[in-house]
Image 1 (cartoon, one colour):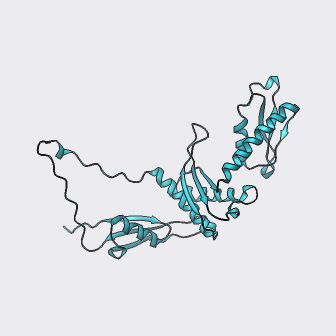
Image 2: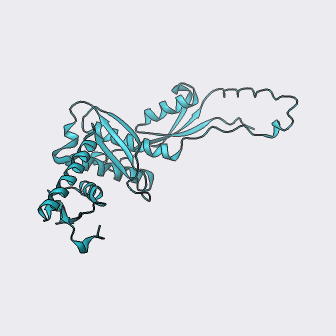
Image 3: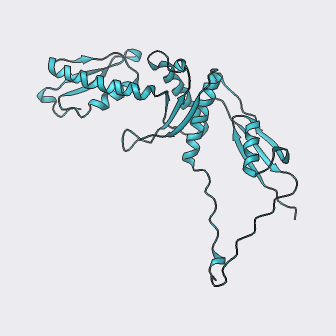
Amino acid sequence: MPESRPSLEMIAPTVDEAVARGAAELGVTPDRLLVEVLDEGGHGMLGLGSRQARVRLTLLGAVPSPRPAPAVPADDEDFDDEEAPAEDPASPADHEIEVARDTVRELVSLMGLTARVSGRWGEADEPDEPRPVLVDIRGDDLSLLIGRRGESLAALQYITRLIVGKELGDYLPIVVDVEGYRARRERQLRQLARRMAEQAVERGRTMTLEPMSPAERRIIHLELRDHQRVFTESIGEGENRKVTVVPRRSEDSGRL
């Protein structure tokens, strides 16, 4: 029978990078690989709808000899029947982080910016909600990525979610942050929520906050949802939608 040669498929932002990764995984140089390009990949507007390159790599020349199996103790008769544990493949969870991180890295690069991009799992706000992937961007002079009141950052996060969702075939909650901007903004909003609650109670009237994005309004609602003396409501439409902090009356005692 003809000798079976090792082959594998690799996915990366470019064909060259896919070949390099495959060569490293097989432990050979790229010139020892037969490269079949399955998908050259491509970029859409601002990376929207972009595809990663996909190649099939087949090893040329002599097939590396398998490593000799370790000696089996003579007095262990059952050992021969046990299969050696296979190496664990990269978990789907790690793949999701990698796709999100690489997507943001590509978008930032298309904007002509140089930055370090990392990804990790975050914690869900509610027990029944999925954990988000947190993608952090670090570098010099990245204010362009944040924009006025975080509008550019919100757009970057939205586009990232669209691209990653298409790549994975499923929705993945992703939070994109630049130099800790979101964390600082969240602290500010939580402080603002508590201050507005105090004023609503002291003055006995509804306090109305400035228009905010859905994500920022959610922070206000979560911060005050267990408050004993106020509750929150969102009013308005579109970009003018805002949060109101309403003092509780006695009949509102059970209202959230």
